[in-house]
Amino acid sequence: MSPIQMLPLLFQKDSIPKAEVPPLRTGQVLFGRVEELYHNETALVRLGNFQVQAQLQAPLAAGSSYWFQVQSSGGDDLQLRVIVKPEQNKRAAESILRQFQLPDTKSNRQLLHFFLERNLPITPDTFKQAAEWIGSKTDPTKGLNALEFIFNRNLPFTKETFQALVAVQESTSFFQELKQLQQFLAEPQFASLKTIAPLKQLVADILRDGSADSGIVRFDSGEAVKQLLQEIIHKLGLTYEKEVGVWSLAGKDSMKPLDTFKPLLMSAMAELGAAGEKLEPLLQRLTGMQIIAQDPAAPMQQLVMQLPISFGHAQSDVTIQWNGRKKDNGQIDPIFAGFYSI
Image (cartoon, rainbow, N blue to C red):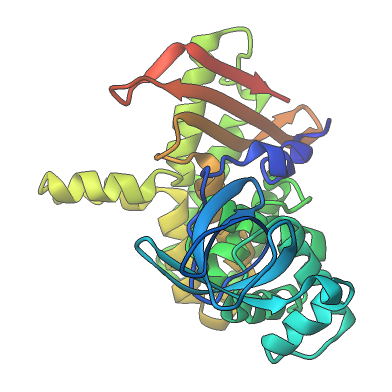
């Protein structure tokens, strides 16, 4: 397995933790089976791997399956409306797209099938937004992976989150992107900008620290690997937002957190103006790595990082995955911690 192949594994269905009963949203479309009928037009409905008790807006048959749209999901008052009956299932996609007031195109059908097959919380608004993002020169596979990760991790459904999760699946090595950044920053017309010099120096430091020839990288020592990880993670600015918060709460005036790669890259983009747009994919990739790093609310913690490493003339990335389990007090249990590299 190549280093880049480990990152898309995080997007696979079985590796993403899900809630037992996912939150239902008004307008959401789901496929379900009526298990039992009760009085007052209520029923026990199976939606995927979970069951809910809901009020139905029309008399239905127990044992039959329908396409439902959530009409109300406040508190215990779940109301479902049938939008596709069993005899219409063969034309379900056409019926749902008509409900959403969207054209019945091949791309819309494929996207709808993706949402429904994975039982993702599809609504007219989220579907329209997803269709726009997928259609904007985005690799379809990476885009669909990103969408599934957003919904299963309950992340903000924003274009910025989507772009970051697409960028983190980039096949170009992180090392190569940093080398390209070096070449870009070396252009004479940028020399007078105040952010360029410190950014160039930091990129050089990161690439040097990741060189096996430098003597810093020693994979025969666990402590040395740990120190290298901490240093590279800090220099890349992957803990930038956290560090800014800590320094702010402490009332310190030092700008130390702003000397790392991510904030310097953002400052350089602002100074460069239109030319700074070329650096946006790299910033999105960094943000994507932060997003997939770990889920603070989950009992299992997962950290995946790509570090630029060179061995002589071979320049590539080392992908590192760390897994751990939280104790009841929130601390990591060392018995269930694992560290892997490729």
